[in-house]
Amino acid sequence: MKKYLLFSVLAFASIYSNAQDKQKAQECFQKADYKCAEEEYLKLAQSEKIQQIQSEYYNNLGTAQRRLGKTTSAFKSYESALKSNPMSAAVYANLGSIHSQKGNKQAALDYLNKGLQIEPENVDMYLTRSKVYENLGKKDLAAKDLNQILSFAPDNIYARTGLANLKKNSGDLEGSLKDYNQLIAEKPESLLYSGRADVYYKLKKNKEALADVNKAISIDPKFAQAYVNKALILFETAKPKEACASLDKAVSLGYEKPLLLEYYSKCEAKK
Image (tube, rainbow, N blue to C red; front, side, top):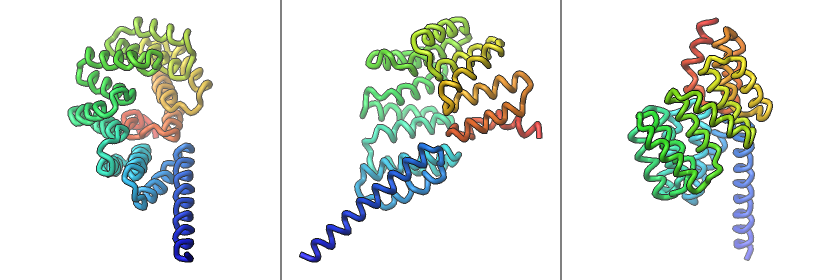
């Protein structure tokens, strides 16, 4: 009886400790303290015995490492996550995304296609695959994926802005602007103001672009993409110091610094 009680106490203590560690890891991530999140999720992943839960920890670990610019470590963590749970759609989504980021388009498509077989209505994977198709010059397939999202999630703002961005990136700036105006009229959100700011920027309307990006930041001060867009406008208007500070703010909010190296080179040139 005493042995049973001791075992029960130890088991309860272990569960309680893991719950605390998981909460700490989540809090670190929410605060954008990715170094802390990396340390906590690594401990959780290494100690977890249930494979599906272990996969979740490795997946979160990989994302924390991406935010820290540790791409090689992130690859390994995602691969460990997939090994622990080969049926995790979230892991396929991240592997597709990171391969796309590194320019490995076919590998990205392979992972995303497999993930969509597991979870046919996964918005993130359709969005990522759409971007891969666009980068490959297959704009019809990119638009098809975005419209597929709208077939089961008709109000999805990311799919609708994705279609507006396809117009923008194809050179139809006025058509894209019209779409953004309509979207903002329906639901004025940070994402939309930031997106329209980029259209204004490409139209050489920097005053309107800056007004929109500042509106985006006022709505959501933690929206990293808005700070990146603001940096581009500030570089264009010969304000490099403010632009570099805006890039730093974006990175502090979780934007992956390796994606901004081209712009950071302008900061280095000014030193």
